[in-house]
Image 1 (cartoon, rainbow, N blue to C red):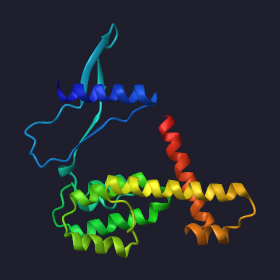
Image 2 (cartoon, one colour):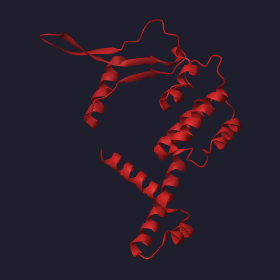
Image 3 (cartoon, rainbow, N blue to C red):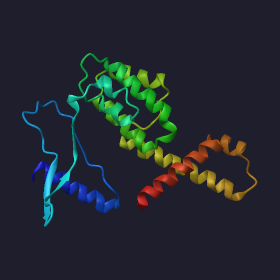
Image 4 (cartoon, helix red, strand yellow):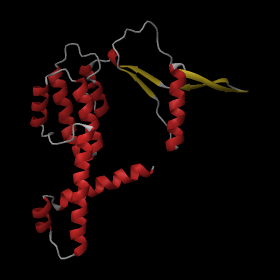
Length: 207
C-alpha cells in the first residue's frame, strides 16, 4: 500500500470514529535526506465536473525546521517537536528546560495521561544525561508524575481508591474537610480537581 493511500485510509478511520473534521498532518522525524518531495495527496475518486478528486494532507519534514525556532512557538507540540528538529547550535539541556518550564505552567490544564505522554516523549528523544534530566524536572517542580504506563495505572488506581473513600465519607454527612484531609491527605481543592479529571476521562471514553 502506498504511503498516500495509508494516510487516506487513516483519515477515513478517524472521521468514522469521531464524525468530525480531521486535520491530516504527517510528521517525518527521520534523518534521511529526501531525494525528491514526498506526495501530499491521494487520488481516491472522480466526478463529471472535476474529474480526479484528491485527498490532500500536510507533510512536515522536521529536520528542515530549526529547533531554536520551534522552541519559541506558543504551541506545546511545537516545543516538543523541537527535540527532533535540526538542533544545530542549540543547547539540548536548554531545550528540555524550556519544554518543562512550559509544561509546568500548563500542568493545571493537562490531564495525567497527557503528562505521561509528554514525559515519555521527552525521555526518549532528549540528548542529555538522566541526571541532568531529573535535575531539570526538580527545578520546575515536575517530579512525582507517572513515568511509565505501569506507574500511571498504579497511580490512577490509588487515586480512584482515594476518591471512593472521600465520597463515602461525604455521603455519610457531618464530616468536615479537616478530618478528610487528615485521613486521606487530600484537601477539598485537590478532590475537586480529581473529580474533574475523572469526569473528563469518562466523557472521552464515551465518545
